[in-house]
Length: 71
Image (cartoon, rainbow, N blue to C red; front, side, top):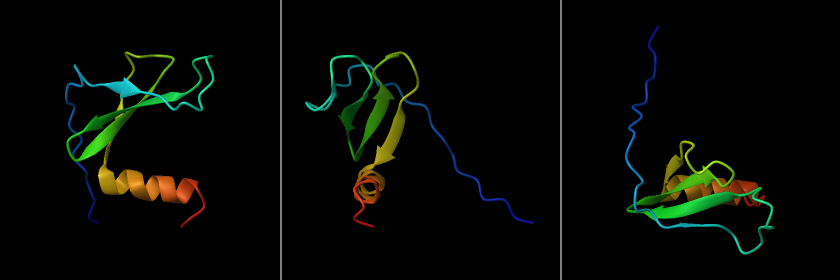
């Protein structure tokens, strides 16, 4: 049996410019996004020290299309 493995790499996001949607309420129940070369990072606005998820631009595009019911 062959196992598929994916390498995960931790990288510093110090200095990243985080933003949240203007549609977000002021109660801290949202995510923040930072633009990165070739993609973006997403984190929980309630815990700014929690790990962020990193996405390649094509992965994020597909996720948004699926969430919007376009795929």
